Image (cartoon, rainbow, N blue to C red; front, side, top):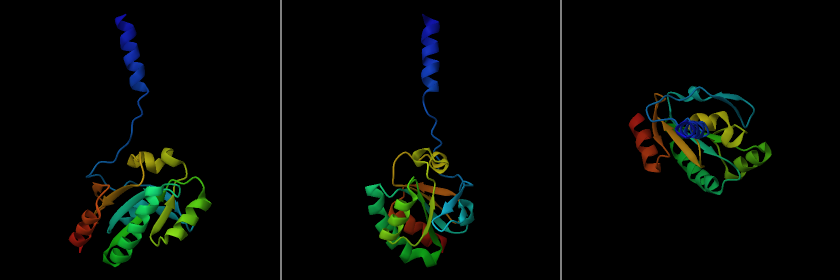
Length: 159
C-alpha cells in the first residue's frame, strides 16, 4: 500500500512540465530566429542597447493592442539606444507578416512558428501573451512584463 502511494506520487511528479522561466539577473539567451525579411537574428546581438523582447501573435487580441503602444514607444526612444524585438509565435507566416504591416511595426520582427512549444517560448517561459522581457544595455534581464514607465526609466538610465 505504501509502495503504491510512493509510485503514484513519483509518476505524478513526472507529469508536471518543467517551465524554463527566465529570472531577473540572467543574460540575454543565445537564440537565433528568422526575421520577417528572412535574415538570421541572434538575440545576443542586441547587447549594448536597452532591449525589450516582446512575444506576440497575429491572432492574439491583447498583443495587437500592445503593438500599438510599442510602436509609439519605439518611435519615441529608438534614437536613444532602445530596441524592441518582436517574437511572433505565429504558425501562419502570411498572417504574421500581414499583422506587421497592419500594425505599422518598424522594429525587428522574428518568428518562432511552433507556438507555445517554440524553443524561444520555452526558454523564456512564455505561458501567456503578450509577454515581454526588458534587458538593460549589458544584456541582463531586469524586468518581466515591465510597465511603460519602467522601460522609460531604463532608457533614461542608460543615456
